[in-house]
Image 1 (cartoon, rainbow, N blue to C red):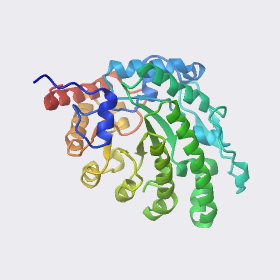
Image 2 (tube, helix red, strand yellow):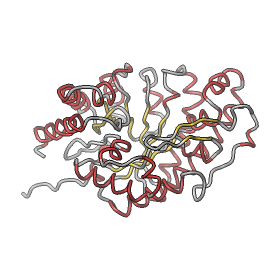
Image 3 (cartoon, one colour):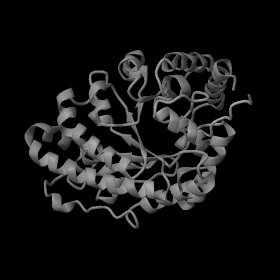
Image 4 (cartoon, rainbow, N blue to C red):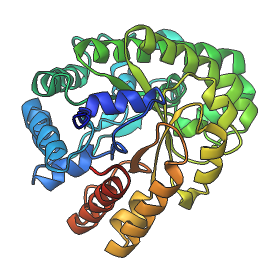
Length: 353
């Protein structure tokens, strides 16, 4: 009997998201910023020509045998298209500076986004299209979108939003509904352009900011609506949940996310508990700390934590290795290489690959 054919990265990742057997542990570090720096570019150069970023992603993923390519870090493109003002920098992601509802509760001030012409969204759509042209069905394309809840935070401003949870909950639900609709429109445009996985970020709904019952009331129903829309459009959903979520793993599973991306143990995210409670229900992604370990730690620290993540994570079905968040752009090359080498050594010892 001949040797079994190796999976392509897309086959491997899709199998993991469906909790099926894979030929080796997939690796999907968030290298959007890091790839830019690695090849000596700045963010502003990526904005000038989307093909530069496509080259960066494809070349970086192939150089390190990674299992996906990513779109570029833009923080809050949907909110910007719906009225948020942002500041752009030479060499870092943009930063929100003024929310359209900062001094108003008039929802008519929020415009529904148009993916064809609003803000930086056409650039992001072109990046996804360019990636699709380059990688076809070999590598899955991961494209970023806010959770509707987080989009609403950007549109209202965090201080006002947190007060609104108590002071005007009915109005706030209307805002989150509107914000979610914008995210659905944008996410569907990314899927149409070629995205296979939509990465959803929702850190401000974590236990680091709000109680469990607030998440259940103000975020969970909208998460589910948003994820259902992406599934209907043909994509998988990765839920990246920065912060502490250990008291709401059961609720997160109800969103219908295919992949849960876990934050670091340094913010007290219990990886072993997550594996126990969710490891047979949903694919887990994580959990090497990207600041204290990959950016600031030694090569030996990186190797140790990467091996620990692999040992713990592979007790779950569908585990995929990653950093706990975005790999910082100034991460030492020797640390990133140590992360990759440890992963490859683990696969070689376990899978013979």
